[in-house]
Image 1 (cartoon, rainbow, N blue to C red):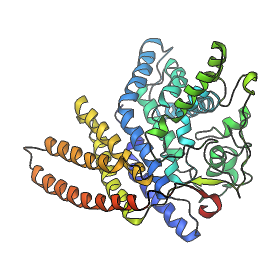
Image 2 (spheres, rainbow, N blue to C red):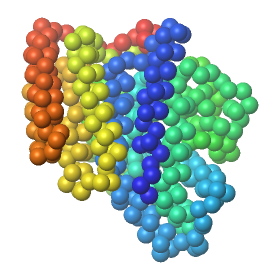
Image 3 (cartoon, rainbow, N blue to C red):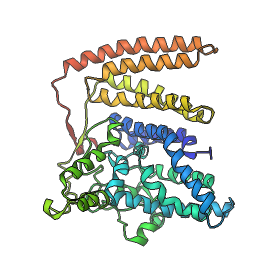
Image 4 (tube, rainbow, N blue to C red):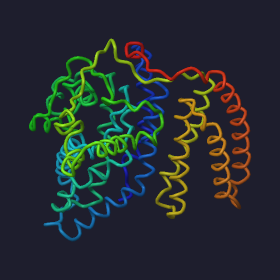
Length: 420
């Protein structure tokens, strides 16, 4: 139960992103933007952190069903792992499809579709709450007697497969397009073009979409993102945006039955008295603009420097999680969420971000020093934390001066053609 392929594969994720950046240089394309990529990765880091608590609930429910209601018990043989992989992918298809076709469930999944770019960092843009809208689709596997530990492993490998298909660097792949999910098929899935919406829900095998009528070939280049862009780099805020949208929809929609339909019908459903179903509008490549913010090197390098520290700290935290008590786990999750909050604020020039970042540096350093107190690591940590805090303070003062010098300049959207 402790083996998680996703956590183990983290170095591979960043290695492949580095490779994609090299390919980008050779192809002279611009598929990455720092602000978008950082937000994508932050969503994934936050998801892995909160999953420590959330997955405990969902795995416990699955285990209870398996222990008390399973029709029989399936042995963990190689053949049964292969069968489970196909069975998991079949359940994943329906879970994924319903997360697109039920408005309440879309509240979780839409985070993954928010990025207006398409690169490997988008694969890491995962919702923190989607687990609650998908876990029950896999309960039939518990009834069929598949061991919980086998399910955790298979689900991890299924998710690993889906990482590499988030790229524009790979075109169509010949005969594989007929039965495997590929970058081409998944680009369609991330497109906000009306013909691409709610298509190609496959995890590993595109055969499910071909069987159940949700397949769409990639034709014109997709425009990525959701129909109502979130316009923020805040990874915490993006996880709550559609819940806020639904709250507003419920308030505006008359009648209890209509409110239930708002929750459980497709996103965009409205009663006839409010205009009926709201379909996705057509989008024009020449007119469409991406949300973007322009920041100088002093901000970008500050974010990169601290983000490397955050990723290193998060990776260590995840690797040691089984050795920690719940107090330490809670502290680790809190520090992780605190660390991923401020890059978005710096990119968006928020007034609150400078004092909050100062506070984060002091709080994080104090907690780390407390945890290593009376160990041989205390003196190196003290020197390191003091150095980082002093350098960062000088850095932040200069960033604050830049904020003041450009506070009148608006944050805009950037023309699609200029960055694609």
